[in-house]
Amino acid sequence: MISYFKEVGTAFWNTCKGLKVTLGYLFKPAITVSYPTEKLVPFEKFRGALLFDTNTCIACNLCVKACPSDCIALKNAKNEQGKTIAKVDWYTIDFGKCNFCRLCEEACPTKPKSVWHSLDYELMFQNRDEMVRSWRKEDDYVGVYFDRGEQKFKPPTGQVPIQDVPARR
Image 1 (tube, rainbow, N blue to C red):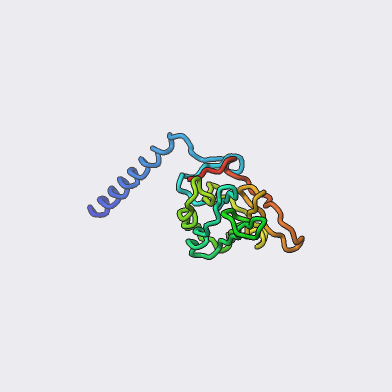
Image 2 (spheres, rainbow, N blue to C red):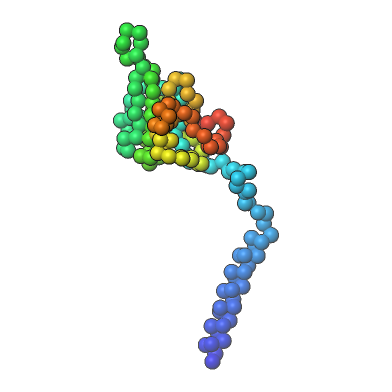
């Protein structure tokens, strides 16, 4: 009988300790965010969507060689005589294959990096075509995709960037 009351007392004491923790959080301010209208900015080392800048790329192919998923391809630009120059004609990343390992960003020798992970965590793809992003000289950081139905390059729709100017590391 004494062991029964001892066990009830121990259970009551453990319940009080748990309620103390709960009551401690009851009076602290809420840290929730109204998600669709407010967005949290992820921490600095977050690996979001890959972005590309054609103006800083020197077409060295180091990102292509460093990629373990073989999801990056690029084509060097050519001058009027037909010789390849240190500029990129087009650059392609297949997000369906990419495992966001950041090896392409680490291999890039340019300052600032020509390929980098943004802080965007809301990538949205309507079909397989949108997962393959391409960049040419006139394209912005987000890139374009090739729509096989219409047989033309189109900018992606429906994506809301976290930052206006993408942060580079």
